[in-house]
Length: 186
Ligand code: GTP
Ligand code: MG
Image (cartoon, rainbow, N blue to C red):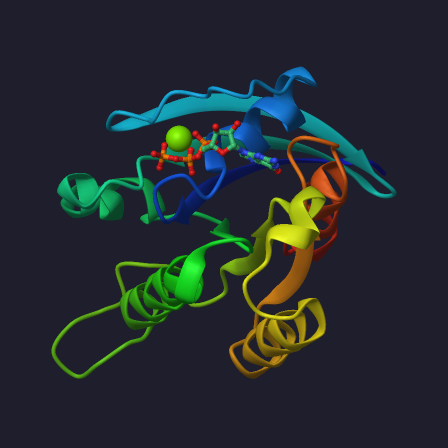
């Protein structure tokens, strides 16, 4: 029969990468050019029907500003899924580098050691979103090279990768749908 799944999902990534914009697009179908920087975190929920299940996402949209970094574990703890967002137009790939740091942090929290049990979820479904795909021309690196880098990185680290645009809605529902499909069916 049809299963109901509740899934805590966290968005992480650099300031201005477009986390809030992706959530706003997914939950309300809207986009604003002057989205305000998130303070602390914001909560949303949205339900998505996949073939065999109805997934209720409980979404934590975190703040990218460094001063909020210490709050992040509250939001990713126990999360079934994470979307790590970077801005593909960001100079010198600083936003991409920040995304990699988040992946490392999630992986470290999810792994067990002799001294401590995992805080995070080792089976977390992780997506890497290269956002602002509508601004292709503004990219500093050639489109092909940076996309390939991200694809290779995602594959090596157990994430799946998509280029998204909160502005045009490209791949926004798709990334949540892809996560919903990958969640464990208990
Ligand atoms: P913090 O809350 O500060 O961590 O930032 P954030 O990751 O939530 O970014 P936010 O959604 O606030 O977006 C930052 C800016 O980028 C806003 O002005 C958005 O309008 C813009 N933006 C977000 N997504 C896109 C996109 O896909 N395309 C374009 N062109 N602009 C975008
Ligand atoms: Mg935000």
